[in-house]
Length: 573
Image (cartoon, rainbow, N blue to C red):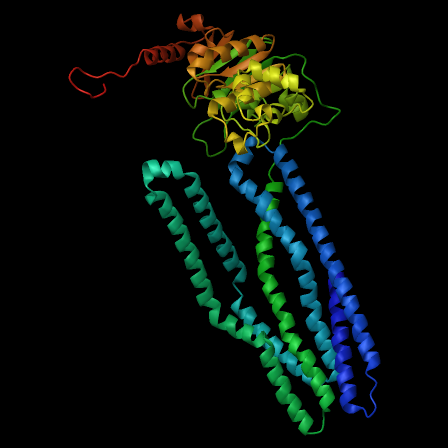
């Protein structure tokens, strides 16, 4: 900004030199214009050098700020609980990381030099005019102040209106994204009437904000902008200068020099008024970035207090957890169990019973409200995230692949793994065959979020990723959900062989996959209602009975369900 201000001053040095040269040519009998021309040339060179240097520095600063902000937001988001991230929403977080940070980049790169020029230019113009003729300078200043007063009245509710304007724009953007992303569902069920109606209402709200803004401030704003233009100032300087010239109180050279400078006084103020809108918009981005940086982080133990797990056991002690104050009921209530090292523990129950919540409390995606979650005899809150992640691997039902190669996706978290290790993990996960059939094999790009692969293929790649990491504790959340019947048996066998010696917690809806588990935990509405082996639970030897037997009976009925028709009709029964 200082460099830009100096460049603007050099620009006015050039204008001042030219003005004094004109004055000398008109008033002196033997004028020497060359000193003024030399000063104007020197000022022009300095102006260009300072202007380019200011431009470079502002853009360097903008890129530095962009790097700092994106790094800081990303590092902070990585320390925030998954619950807070989900509450904020991935769309809102992506907007902060991309759009809001970019808004600050634009502001620093382009607006800070403009602010300096917009502030210095009118002051330098008026200073030169006062040096030439204080009466004409006062007249020009009066016109500018009148325009500023009218604009200030017109823009007195500018902050509120800018906020409403940006909110209306964001609603339109959100409605467009929702409509596009929901297109398959819209075409199947809605025909666009409901979802497109939300988009239309967002557009109507946006139009209403614009109309009320323009209608409320249109006349006064236009009058103020007209007063801030060059023509009213020039008209006043021409009229008052002509009167002073005819009265003999002003020489023609001074009058002409003031006219040259006066044309830029009002126009120099216009960029400053225009930039105020950008300031308001940027402040909204600043507040959104600050909201993300103020999200509470999961506390980490100090290095001296950190503890390492003693073994691969997992224990829940009287755990209570809720997904927020607005939750209808707790996700888990007084849950206690122990998964011994090297055993397979299956978690079953109706939808919403709390199975996935248990799986996601182990990696400390959330902190429990009461009780403790222990890994290797150590509370997960007493070990660092890196230590915890070195002991636990995950395969969730919601798979995520990056747009890089399949080999890089399998190596995620273990980039130093060799190609032979990657192939071995893929083979164990029943993925090697279909990967080899791809055009570029393991170098084939998976596409954004694995768009080029089927659901079952993505699932097997994430399983290969977990197998490669070879961590002592493995959490599977319906790991065979997308496996077709032909591959499911082989996949289960491969997992069983490779999980030997590891502590496995498996969330399963297909009860046939967990019959041989060392223990089965049955959840119902956040409570651990039964536990034991498959045979013990069916025989009623567990801590309670009923839920698992009912689930198993429903599973067996589903296995024998067939689609058939009554004789003589084609109506399914």
